[in-house]
Image 1: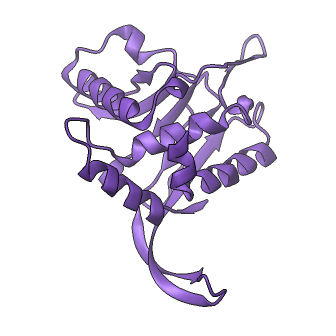
Image 2: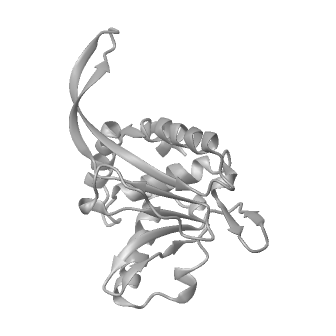
Length: 204
């Protein structure tokens, strides 16, 4: 799905301008916060599937894996109880975990136990990807590169006009044995509503 993140990027810039000694906000903390907000409505995404036993285990807490490239290869540090953290706390934890993964100081407990994974190539990302599920999880979400494009928007007067907007595609892969296509598509649309209304997202 394509997401208009113009307003969210503006809010992010304003928060960073007044951040003081807090960590700089990237797009990832907002995505994590939005995902955690929606998981109670879409619990089947935050689950594991045991192939041998044929058992699905759904989780209440969101232990979100954030795929990170390191000198030792791809690692997935885990933000424990991500649903209990605000965007500043998420930014600090993402930065801490990514650094620990890169310098080899990450504990095994920090690199395991994720219930859902977010993967992003950052500046290297394309406009669409096919992320690979981090088993035994049943879903993975992949934000892609933000690009500026002329877009038709409806003004306050109800008239259409062309504006330069910041757009981002988000790709998602799901295990169809657990996650129905309708539920995955519904999640994508719900995520769109949250990300395109940053005031609602930040209000908590």
